[in-house]
Image 1 (cartoon, helix red, strand yellow):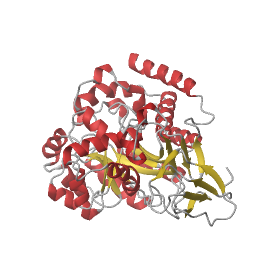
Image 2 (tube, one colour; image 1 turned 45 degrees about the vertical axis):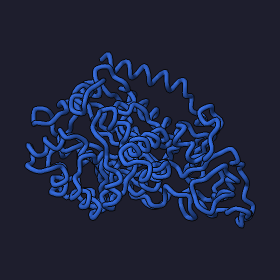
Image 3 (cartoon, one colour; image 1 turned 90 degrees about the vertical axis):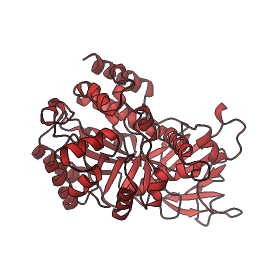
Length: 449
C-alpha cells in the first residue's frame, strides 16, 4: 500500500474515540487527523474508505499467549485438571514439537488473532526440545508473512523434575544456552522506535520451572539490552505454596529479590496478590496481563482487576495458550473479561468500555508501546473494523456495546501500520483450508506420538 496516500476512514457507524464522529485520516502508518461531526478532513487528497457499516476500534493488543499450544487444544489427557496436573499431562506432548509443527502452530495462532481484530500480539515460547533451538526465528518469519506486530518473548525453563521443578528434562535448557540465545535473538530481531513491527523480550517461564540464578541473570541481561521482562506469577495457590516452600517467601517477594519488580516487567495472571502487593506493583510500574478465559477453564481464580487499577497497576488482556483457553480470539477475550469482572464487581464498576480499554490502552501499557492502543493523532494506524450484520447483532442499539455484549468474534477489516492485513473477513493470500488441514495433521501426530 502506498504509505504516502492519505486514507479517510469515513463516517463510521461508531468509533472508540472522542471527536472522531466522521472518522479519521491515516497516512504514513500514523493517524494524522480525527474528523469531528459536521466537518471534512483538512488533509488534502485523502482517499475515502466508506466505514458506514463498521464499528472502528484501535487494534486490539494481546499481552500473553503460547502460540504452540494451538496444537493441543482440548487434549483429552489434560481436560478437567488444575494448572500443575494440566502441565504434567501436556509436557510430554509438547516435547514432540518440531520446527514444522511449530511453524503451523504459530501461523494458526497469529491468523486467528488477526481475524479477531488483534494488530499486536506477544508470545511466550519456553519449550525447547532438541531440534527446536531456533523457535524464535520460526515465529519471526511467520509474523512477517502475516504482517502482524509482535513482541516475542524468549522464554526459558532450566529446573526439570529431577531438580524439583515440573517440566521433564527433554524440554529444558541450561542457563548458558538460554542467555546466549537471548542475546542472539535480541541482536538479530529487536526493533526500536514507534514503527517497530518485531520486538523481543526475555521471559523465564515461572518460579517453579527456572532457577533463581536464571531469574537474576535474565533481569541483568534485560537491563543491559534494554528489553522488557515477562513471566507467569501469582496464578494459583499451588504456586504460592511452592514459593514459600522453595524460597521461603511469597511469589512477589521472590520476584523483587531477583530484580524484577520494576517498570520493565509485566506479569501474566496476577490472581493471588494481597493489597500490599498490589500497591508495590503499582509503585514499581509492573503491569498485569489478565487472562480471563484461561483462568476460568483451569479454575485458577479471578484477577482482582479493579483493586489493581486503584493501586495504579496497568491491566491488559491476554488470550493465554490455546491449550487452556482454548482459542486465540482476542475479541472473545474482551467479552470474557467483561463478564467475569462484571460478575465480581457489579454494574457500577465494570462496563463494556472498561473491557475494551484493557485490550487497547491497558495492553499497550503492559508492553511499553504507548503509541499503540488508541485512536488519536500521532498514534499508529492500527485499526480493527467490525460489521454488525450477523444474526447475533440483530436488534442492537449501542454499536460499541453490541460488539462486547452480543459476542463479536471476527473483524471485517484490520489495518496494521496503515496497511490492510484483513479484508472482507479474510487474510489475503492465506489458504486457510490448507493451513487448517496441515495444522490438524501435525496436532494429530503430536497426540499420537
